Image (cartoon, helix red, strand yellow):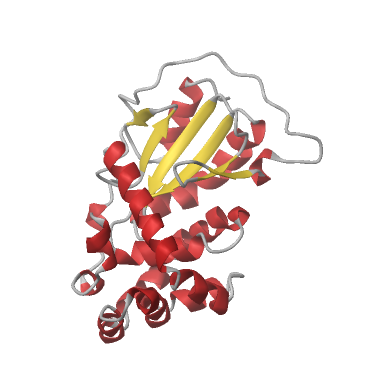
Length: 250
């Protein structure tokens, strides 16, 4: 999806959210990563925790964990994807507590846009401190039913918002869908959210980076995982954990 298509919303704003666009396959074979010996834990610096260490990567992703971890897991995710929500609710806690915490695994979340709502949600999730991006994303996925209710509840207002100039458009969509209110209840003030969604240059840069990453890595569905640069052939936590263990995480 091109930048111009994502940023000019008229028809897409009213389109039904297609969860079928998510890739929810979960095969346990053909994982595509070699087996490795167990790797020793890497202690975090004194007074620090790897699960609280956040780095914004050159690809615009938000990575938690040891930046120099020998095992690097990357997820391309859409905030309106049910399969991404399933991974967030079943896999994120063990991933962080059992693998990232050891310093052996880092986990980077990158955006993948299925629809214009993803742009608004990502703009809000990335609006505050970098440490809040993944927790806010998880809040969206853990409350996806209520988020969908807001997204689909006021189509006339969304249609009207789609006709506004870009510096007003995403703010109006955030208001019409309840997203500004949703994030405000989780620590991102409505004024702060409006300022981020009104920043046209920032939104355009976000879309361009996301599109470039998706084209380069041939992302056709969400979630899509890469482990040390190799695609993981599945999306469930069981498949991802098996891949991590085969790569040497224990």
